[in-house]
Amino acid sequence: MQFSSSKFNSLSGPFFTLLAGFILNIFPWGNSPWVPDFLLVVLAFWVLQAPEKINLLTAFILGLLMDIQTTQILGVHAIVYVCTCFMILYAQRRLSNTTLLGQTFIMLQVFLLANLIQLFILWIIGQGKEISLAYLFLPSLIEAFLWPFLKRLLSARFTFLNNQN
Image 1 (cartoon, rainbow, N blue to C red):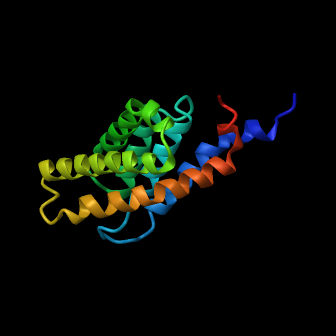
Image 2: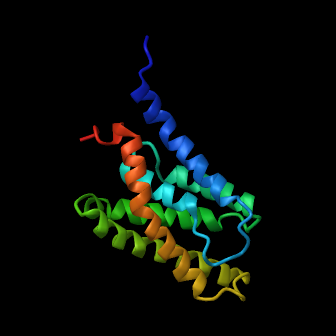
């Protein structure tokens, strides 16, 4: 029984890229509004490109791991990641049939909603008193700016994504 490299890429590709996004999130960037959620961008890519491999359960588990890592109340990132993945799955046909620039604008809306949900949850539980609108707009713009680069990089690296259709 041979194990081809494309089969290995289809199994390990999402794992290692999500791990890289998680590691980028745990760097000590500080509490700056310019720091995007790298894991959210990578998760958004995989939910759009391979929803049969990365689904809402994966988003929930990654969100819980992110909550544990950031020592926030358990479930904040989990809710944000699941809501983001749901929005992407809802707009999947529209995202698939548009150009990369169109995808970037749609993903900007998705990231804005994701950051708005996170700020709203933090405001409800009382941890968002010092948070300004910069924490809503700056990470969303940077995440949307990262989207086309990440999409091109990962689509070129993992050729099994192009062979799905």
